[in-house]
Length: 288
Image 1 (cartoon, rainbow, N blue to C red):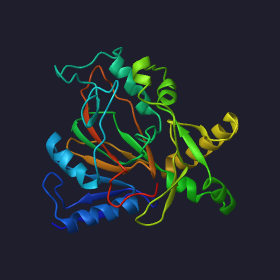
Image 2 (cartoon, one colour):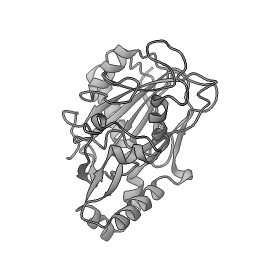
Image 3 (cartoon, one colour):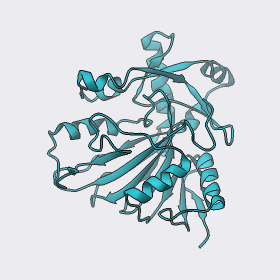
Image 4 (cartoon, helix red, strand yellow):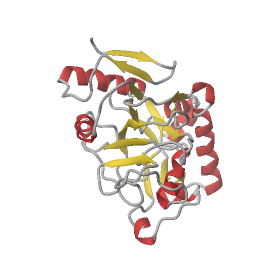
């Protein structure tokens, strides 16, 4: 079967079939995948059979994997583990455990690693064990938000910088880092408008980590960020994925935001493994 790319919404998102991403891909096949990524921002690969080793190999085709720090259950590896299962015992983590409290911010619309000095290119999430109900992931296009602006508004945004702060976003759900953890994540500044080098499409860097606009009063900056997020996340233009074991999704962290949805963490098991790809050294590089 040859690779097939099937759009899922008029604006973004596609289902990719006819390819096994657990095996080495030749250059031409991966180039098709990368072109689809640039065009659709979110790619769903159903029924894959990735393990940690093959997920890392596929991820590194996009660029170098980031490391994971602090309170994530997989800290110290290239994986960010989205799970209610203890890594050592495999048993369900109690809901009042700090590791579960940390993950509550995943229910907020966000862009992975936008709080880092180097923004990420994309995330790759594979479903290893899924609950029978709940635990979907939703996506929204930040290109839609940018495209909805007037020419004058676009010109203004093109000149702006946005502050992203991991302490701020985790604080929105009441989670607090220790002083040692917090020191790893000082606030960072990024260009507000991002440009895809493959096709020139523009997007805005928004989401829960976005704290404010540099040089603007806090209230004015918050109003702009909230307005753009509302434009992007209207339910009728979002993409919701109900996971099946083996599904893998690749999404563009500079052109989409996403959020997890709830499931019964006491009753059901869920194990998702995420690799995040740095934009530094990615192919082709995004505009800085």
